[in-house]
Each structure stands twice: as C-alpha cells, then as structure tokens.
Length: 137
Length: 137
Length: 137
Image (cartoon, rainbow over all chains, first blue to last red):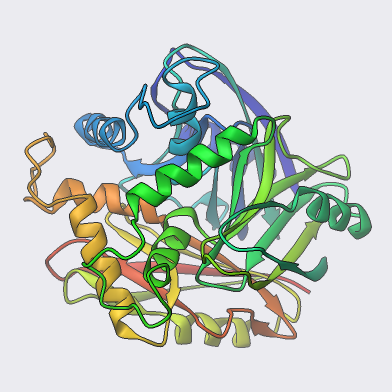
C-alpha cells in the first residue's frame, strides 16, 4: 500500500501527460503485482487514457468534445463562473475523474500506445491535485 | 478489507446523493489508507461524481443527457419497457456504474466540491443495490 | 492477489462477451471478498458493462455510438489508419478501457442483467489483450 499526492499547474483547457508521474510513483511503491489508481479531486478536470504518439489525436478529441458540449450553450443555468463552467462539469462526468491501471512485474501496465492524461476542462489555468494509490504485493 | 451493500429507493429519474453512505462505510471499515469502490448492480442506474454545491449543475446535467440520448428515439429497437428503456442503458454506459475514491487518513478522499451520486435513469421509481468495498491498511 | 492476462481475437466492430473469462479468473483466484479489475491495453477497444439478455440493446448501443462519433467525420485530422481510426479513440475514451467489479462470497458480483463486454471499435479484426487483477482476502 502506497499513496502520494501531486499537483499539476495547468495553462487552461487541454491534455497534460501524467504518465511519467504515475510510473514513478509505481516504481517508488515497490509493489510488484497489483493496481494503481489515480484520482482527480475536482469536478472540472478529468483523467483519461489516450493514444500517446500523434498529438492530433488529442486535438481531435478536444474538438469533438467542444462540439458535443458547447461552451455558452443557452440550455445551461449554471453559468456563475463563465461559459466554460457547466461544460467543464459535463466533460468531467463523460470522461471520468479517475483511472485504474494494473501493476505487473513492478511496472505500470499501460499499453504501448496508452498515455495517462489530466484533461483540464476550464479555459483558465488551475492547480489540480491528483492522488495516486498503489496496492498489491 | 470491508464490504457492505445498501439499497436506495429512487423516485424516478434524477441524482441521489450517496456521499454520506459511502463516508460512513469508510469510517466503519477502520481502514486508514487505501481505496473505496462503489458499484451499482444495474444497467439503468449509474454512479457519478458531480459538483455538490449548486443544484442547477445536476439539473443542467440531466437536461444535457436528455438531449444527447432522447427518450423514444425511433432509432432504438429495444423498447420493451418503454421510451426510457434503451436511453437508460446508454446513459449508464456513458456515465459508468462504479466509482473508485482514495481513502486517506481514515477518510473518503472526495474533493471539497465532489459529491457521489446514484443517477437513476428510468422515469419510474426503482430499488437500487450498491456494493461498497473498502481495501487497504 | 491474483493476475492473469487473456487475449480476444475480434472480428471487427462490436461487443464480445468476456463475463465467463472474468468469472473463471475470479474463481481461480480463490479470493472471497474484494475487487476484480479488468483492463484493455488499447486505445481503440473498451470494456463496458451492458444488459446481457436482449441483443438489440447492444445493436442499439452500437448505432447510437456510430451516430454520436461518425466514421470519416471531416472534423478529424488523425485519419492515418482510415475513417474509423479517430472515432475508435473517442469511443474508447467515452466508454472507458477498464472495469472494476466487487467480489463477494468468492464470486464476481455482476448484477443479474449485467454482462462484461469488450467493445471493439475498429472495423477490422484485432487481437486484444485484457489483464484481470483480483485483490482481497
């Protein structure tokens, strides 16, 4: 059992690679076989696994989501913090705020093309807290 | 290792706060550091983390989902239990049937603005079963 | 703690029932109370829980997703592997690449109507790797 929290300072909407942070925490845990769980303590930033080779995958993903949940949609009542406020909550629920990845042979078992990303959904910069828990033998 | 099941009687479509139930189970588990997992044993009710301060967030979320997956869409063949039957299955898959939250210092590590909700997707009332498993030291 | 990997050869886009594989691994683990986690090591195939009785649920789900994320949408730049390439990444992120299910009384605690499916999002056949980790007492 090993648990650490780290912080990411985002520069506004977009995906931020946290694969290295997660892999380092798995290595520090000394756990050989088990599970690694990462959790975003926010309702407007999510954690996702995404293709890690071609950056256009992540820009296409962003464009898709921006069209699916448009900023400033007049349907929304919750607009206190601006046109990206309610869309950020919906995007987070659709893409989820946590990840669970197997640990095998002492390593985080991400697939070759899988990267772990924090997805900032607000247009302005934020400090985001992520807790990583590693369990196993 | 600690596991409990509880039941929620819903009054039809909408979100039902289960944060207190989850926090109490974590407290009863006596576990200090680890993970807490909640699971809905259904394919038409999901578990989500959502902003917990302004109720308009959850009504906007409901409206968004109702527009994304309209009840009675003529595209659906599976309509045995009515116009909300197939939409309830799709909504559950898009919003997922389980949650995993870190346990830190003996407490459920939800963020300040994160609440845990059972989201009933059927229009009529149902009894929903949720299993909570707490693992750790 | 018990971990196994298995492979599924898909015949292209669609859902493939993996409930039996998961239940057998839980049985082999000898674990009585805990959690079972299944993980797809890919960014174009996901793992979902879905109604397991009427096949039209899964064909309706497929149709819904095909309309939500259309193959060949001109909005996408990432088209290297064809019109289903970028949609497969988005579908996987929306439906997620892993599942966590409680283990109770030595059995995988799926609800009566819940089946576990690998969802192949590419139109051609692929070999998909799934790691299942069972933790508990």
